[in-house]
Image (cartoon, rainbow, N blue to C red; front, side, top):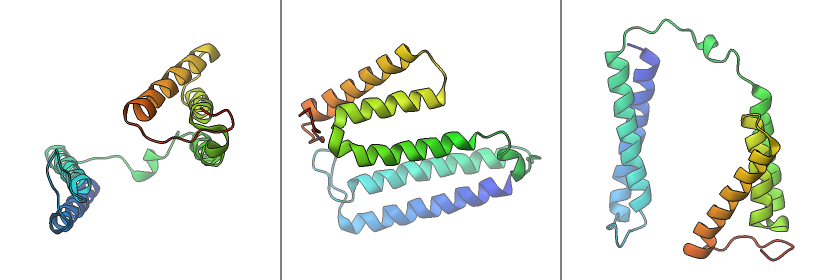
Length: 152
């Protein structure tokens, strides 16, 4: 039984109950006519389910012998910093370059950071992913995306 997991599970269960209770007076609505509290309510329900799973797993599991300092050993912090910096640059360049170009460039960079693959695989994966998300959001869902200097 890991005390930290139990404590964090109880904390997130309390947060999820709080969110669900707050959303009820706002109005949840239905699936076909969602109210302003629909998404936060169901997010709270899912968070509550995950916290219950964490509580049950930590109660059924034996005593954990690992130390907290062992969790941080071997992490590649430069990758975290590089991802954060690339997301900041993406947010700055998105209105100027447009959705397709900026998102493709970001994905190429992120695919390269996470796993070293051949460049053509990174580029092809990024272009397919950005194009599919463009089709889903811009064409199918009619969401306005930044057009950029080239108009797309």
